[in-house]
Image 1 (cartoon, rainbow, N blue to C red):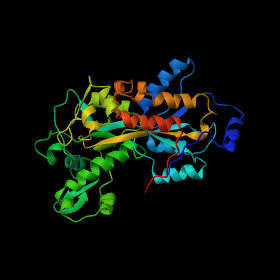
Image 2: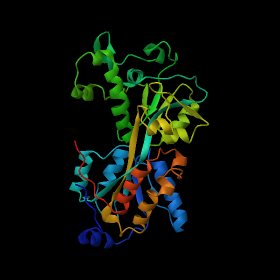
Image 3: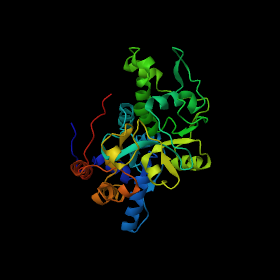
Image 4: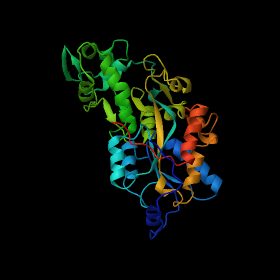
Length: 344
């Protein structure tokens, strides 16, 4: 059960406060999807406080969790953004390293977006077509085999007669984890070979999770702005990233509808867009009251002016929480509510 805490333990506080060089800037790491939101809050907070803004680094969800869970003290990050919930293995890593008091905060909702240049011809994809284009192995003549498809039109004649080229996130990214779970697994399950084959969830996890490595799918790192640049340079390429990057580049890019639905604030909020997901930030409570202004930064991050309807994060593409849910998040943030261990 979650519990509220008023302050960190004395031993932890002394350990941090006793550092030879006290850190006076908040450090936030994590997801490239959450990065634009954390950066916007950091800039607003710096302007309000009149001092140095918090440092925000785009390390990917997995990389951010490793940094965040590395330990307690001024040498370790205070917060991490995540485009998926913390995994049990990451919680265990935190626990092993003394990071035992963490507040999990739901920031809002995001849609995993497949986008391409505005100069490209329009087309739409089903999750099954996405899987057939990007998976390492697919059904071929009744057998499970290495993916032979090189062109979209080889999957379906109605699709463009161009080479498949998709720039996407690396394995350390929460966006990659979410894309595999929400798009690839569902696309795999929709294939007649799998749907009619009686395969269970373990088989899906083992056989439908690998992205192809023979060229059509390219791991583009944690900087989604580089994917945007590549899509501008090649009208035949598509990119996979969070909705905020499409939102901020609507003059250059357009969405590829998935299962007949385009990502936007409404379709992400009601999850009619099939590859929508929640996004999070995690706060190291032992650093509250020790790292200057961390409590105030957390309050600004979760404020109605930031995360609420009409707030400045909505202006950056965030699909915001309903008012009642936002109030729950704000209470958890202010009360430093300690999260429960994630379920396997």
